[in-house]
Image 1: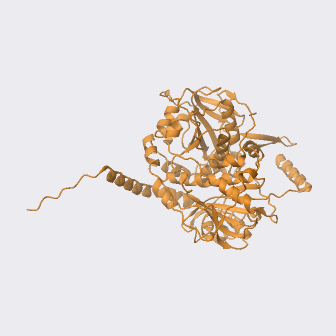
Image 2: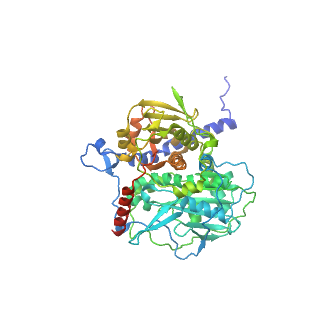
Image 3: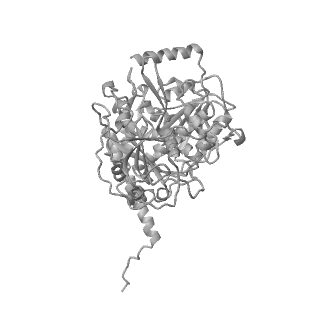
Length: 569
């Protein structure tokens, strides 16, 4: 009689491997929502659609819609959330001179070897003002006021809000606050220390557990959707990256450790802020500073029902945004902890015939402090096309911008998820053409030589300034493995990570005295242009930069007249 067959119990290691496989399979199935959204919000050019006199379209044939919204001025949303019943806590606007040169601040990842770093009210005010505040107001002769924000935003549709959750800080009581950008003040939503609730919602993320203050970025989708419709959800992470770049650099100057956190229970964070998670939703957390102060159990967070000024007389909702945000949400801190478990490191192919980057020596870098660079930053669309920028400047921008950012779900020091691709139009000592950046080797690979100004303008949605600019940098990501590992929420990760590279490149350009601006593109045409190297990758973000065109006196006068006419209409 043969012995009976028995099933041997799995070891702990086997069970962990099996669990990871099952989770990967679930995430692969669940990532369908991200693909649907991504494909539905692709930009398609009129030539590709073979429709005469067509505007930019969005989607995939045959399901194409006009990319731009109706932009009805009668329902244009306010650029601020203004609470009507909360008293402002005014904050200082003058700060001690920053010490860290901007290009060093930009290269900081957020990790600092310090055991204690607690910001005071002055530091909090500086972080808020430099990342989401109004730096300058200009009033035209007709009385119309123009505002200059610290961080640019797609289409100047300022949709981000900044909230703070802190324990007792020097000069600031424990509580939950909204930063009111319109008057550079704080509004206290809740009194008391609610950090333990944030720790729970993030699944006890270590940096959050040690942080004396946590910043929370939210987006009010309609503010950006008024112009860009469903694609506004991509812009949520593009614009958060721009604001984060400022915040991270200023924190580096203030010697504050920083970690960006994308793993959190969405509903729990939204409930703390008393926002609905539909019209306005939390999109990113940032652990700031380090402390051994263990927070006590938080007070009960009851609904507040606070009044704020209406955004507009009516709002238009975009189902694609709601579906994507809901599908990528996490239900609990335990789910957030499981979501970020397991290292994900993208595969990086080897390059051929690489051109080593040659950045400016550290002792020769411009000494401009980060505050000064943020203050003078302006989006630039006018370039001195015939005057080359230096290869050293380009190398410096790339090496400083690709250092990475401390993020709860990514491996420190690992290659980026996205690959930067370049269209080089006029860089001294570098052949015009298309290039790929190799992160590990700190080098460029020439993919195709040749004059490509027309192609640059075409890819950037037929915008001529991309052809005039000296360099266009496209970040492309192979979404398939990212979504397989992270599920639908991986789309948030991919968009933010790629946009952080682009945002740092722009700020680095300004630190070097160059001009820069973020742009947009015809998605599939970008992938096709850089293929076969970029095959299977998806367009995420594009930044263009170069030597600024110095306008003549007559051009400056003409612009002044234009602004006055605009102010009177």
